[in-house]
Amino acid sequence: MQFELQKALPVLERTPQVVESLLYGLPDEWIHNNEGGDTWTPFEIVAHLIHGEKTDWIPRAQVILGEGNKEFVPFDMKGHIKEGKGKTLSQLLDEFKILRKENLAQLQALGPTEEMLDLTGIHPSLGTVTLRHLLASWVVHDLTHIHQLSRVMAKQYSEAVGPWKQFMGVLGGKR
Amino acid sequence: MQFELQKALPVLERTPQVVESLLYGLPDEWIHNNEGGDTWTPFEIVAHLIHGEKTDWIPRAQVILGEGNKEFVPFDMKGHIKEGKGKTLSQLLDEFKILRKENLAQLQALGPTEEMLDLTGIHPSLGTVTLRHLLASWVVHDLTHIHQLSRVMAKQYSEAVGPWKQFMGVLGGKR
Image 1 (cartoon, chains in turn blue, purple):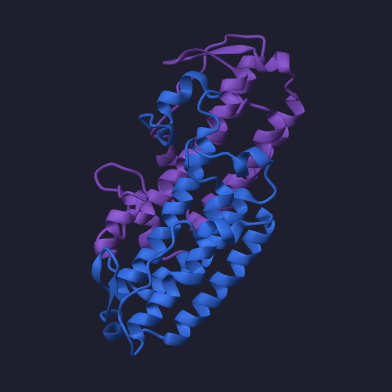
Image 2 (image 1 turned 60 degrees about the vertical axis):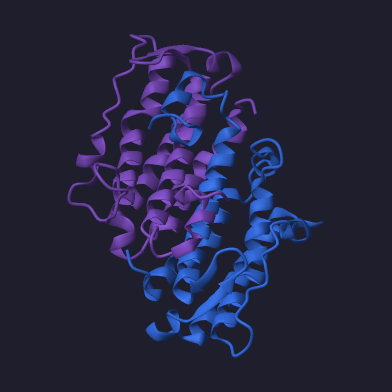
C-alpha cells in the first residue's frame, strides 16, 4: 500500500479513541503492570504517545518543510516520564486526544502536496528520510503501540489462561 | 495477575468499541488487505470474533456448568467465512457488539462463584480446562485479535515507512 494522506489521516484520527476504549476506567493492574524489567506499562505508553505529539511528528514535518537546518532533534525515549508525572490515566487520555486533534489540524493546514511529501529531513540515526516516510511512520507508530498495549495486557493473564497459552498468538502461541 | 471476573469483565465489554474505533469507516485497503497467503484480513478477523461469540466462549461455559457431556464441540477455524458472507464491515461490527452484550449478560446471569470457576470441561485438543481458564482465554483471545489487527494494518505500510521500519516493533523492528 502506497502512502496517501487521505488514507492515513483516518487512522491517525482514530488512535486516541482506540486507546481510550482499550484503557479508560480499567482496574489499576491492567494500567500499571508491565512486561517485566524496564518495559513500559500501558500508562507509560500513553505518556510516550503524548511526548511524540509534542516533539516528534509535527515538529519534524515542520523541519522538513521549513527553511532552516534539516536535522531533526533526537527523540527522547525517556520523555514519557515527565509527561506522566503526577497525572492520572484519564488526564493523559484527554491530553493525547487534544494534542492529536491540534496536530492533525496543523498537518491539514500544511496541506502537503505530492512534491512536498518528497522533501527530506535528516534523522539522527536513520539519515535522510522523506516527509512521506515520516507520516507513514506516524501511522505505524500508533499501530505499534496498540500492538504493544494489547500484548502488555495479555501477558498479565499468561498463567491464568492455563493450557490455552499455546493457542494465543499474543502470548507467543501458534494462532 | 490472577483471574478475577470483576477485572476481566471490563476488558471483554470494551472490545467491540476498540475494534469499531480501529476499523469503522476506514478506506477498503485497510479492511480487506491481509498479511499475505491465507492470513486473515481485518474483515475476516471481525467475522471470526463473531463466530467465537456464537460457538465458543459462552456455549463452552454452559457445557462446563451444565449437567451433560463435558466435551466441547471443536471450534471451526473457518467459521468466519460464512459469518462474513454478503455482509459489510459495519454490519459485522454491529453484530459483534450485540452478541458480546448478550453473552456478557448471560455470563453475569450464570454468576460464576469461585467454586464454579474451578469446574472443568474437556477441550478437543487441550484436554481438561477450568471455567477460569476459559474466561481468561476469552479476554486474551480478544487481545490476540487486537494485536493481530494492528499488525495486519501496520504491514500495509511496511515499505511506506522507508528506513523507519527498523524502529517499528510491529514490523519486527527493535522498538
